[in-house]
Length: 293
Image (tube, rainbow, N blue to C red; front, side):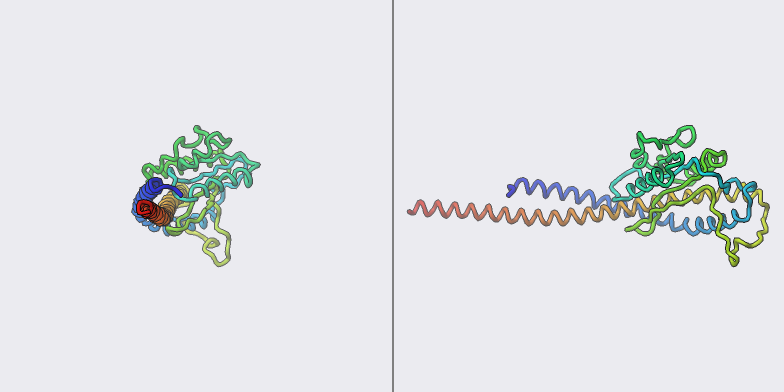
């Protein structure tokens, strides 16, 4: 049985850990509220715009819209979105594993480049053959989390669009955790480019004849690029909210585990202390009897 000093030391250590995890849970809960509000407000607009984008793309030919060009897939870019920090359960590992599986299995016959958005996935790719080519893509896209805003996101999205248009990549995928609620996230693989036209349906608006106002050219040069930028920004907002939700849940579980362990150690300490006191009493009684004898 461990001595009382060792048990007290463990109780103090567990209590300190419990205070830290509890504080981190509260911080994540506060950040989650802001991040959740941002994605909830953005999602309906982004999804409707993406629907319009798919419908519009189905009515334009490749010469009018360069972002719908279907080419033989030889060069693939996978954008993996993780966080800069850990302590959020399996949030980062889920994305990293899925990205690596896409690169090594589904697109093993292609030239795959992985663009890491987030330090965790960037660290996991160091020394691999999928390192980002600095001359082609932003060199430090993980810094997007330092100040998440549409301008920074838009610059990265525009870079991706330019690389696709010039032929550096034939397909661009985004892998991220979509926010569902504080306790769960959905691992999502989204094709950013080329744009996937809405499947034709005889009763759907996709088959209707569109009246373009002001003109097809302005729509192609303005609406479609902006839609793609918003799609990329939504993925970042989704991942941001998912991160805080995952960390809050992880810290909640850690706090509960620490509380349970502290109770067990306290009970163990009380039993050890009671045994020590009983032994001392027995020694005193034994000594007194020896003196009387």
